[in-house]
Image (cartoon, rainbow, N blue to C red; front, side, top):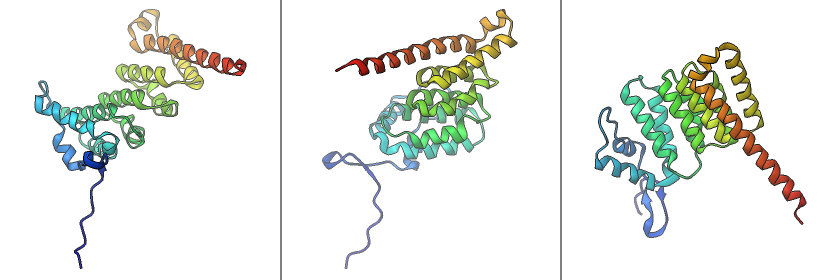
Length: 215
């Protein structure tokens, strides 16, 4: 009788290219978390290796991001979350595990840098469905968070998003003097976003009408 085998780890790829997917602990050891100075060559190679595993490591990345989101806020925490999101952003695949962490933890994180990292990530990998993650950030106290959220919404937004950004801009116009409006980067980005979304919606409408007339 043969002995029971240990549970196998999932693998990335098939045939000769099949590789054992790194565990959460493996990934943690491979992530550089330098606070100062550039990454070394070995750090960059580690990141490229992780990216090469593709969507197979997205669940592990989500777990690591959630762990860091629960940790005490310090420069190293910010660096780790930034690097983890940066790796995930360069992977094609189903990003739901990390988007869920963004929705539940990152966009409400007390640290504004982490909130803006989350906004940038959602804008890069999300769809119109993820606009609901970003819309609350329109009223964030931090200008850089608002800017990242508006830029992301400009990429993903639909008619409802357009109306929310227009409301945001109208409120800013009502509360700020013209001089302060020009200094507020989120106001500038909101104006750009409105034009971007309007243009995309107009092109989509034109394409639908064209489809109706095509034989």
